[in-house]
Amino acid sequence: MLSILTQVASFASTWFEGQKTKAEAKALAEAAMEKAKAAVYEKKALSDENWDMQALQNSQSSWKDEYLLLVYSLPFIMAFFEPTQDYVRTGFTILSQSTPEWYRYSLGVMVASSFGVRSYLTFIKNK
Image (cartoon, rainbow, N blue to C red):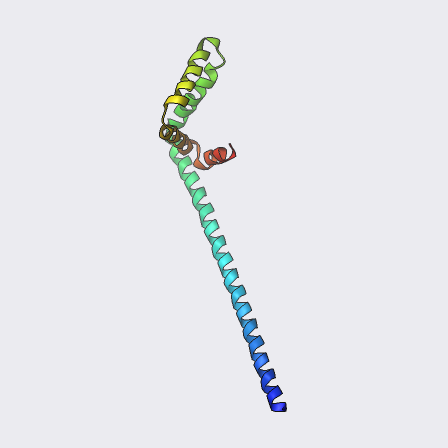
């Protein structure tokens, strides 16, 4: 009888040790997965930062930012002068009703590429 109890106790001890080992392995695997996810997020953030820095360097010798700022500011300024208000209103009405959606999106992409994609996407998301 003592032999049977010893064997059962040995089996139970081995089983519990196996369960402990499985739990430790699962915890290690989950920690490795979280570490890998953190590395992916870190690489993405670094990539975004590099993209912004490259865009900033490329825009140092370009006039397109100034051109776009002028184009976007002109209707705003014209809206304050009564003789030009009808032109602004008519122009925006025609643009909103007559231009294809792809054209409006392509203008948005042009502005985003000039002034920073992430800031434009943040603006659109908050809209």
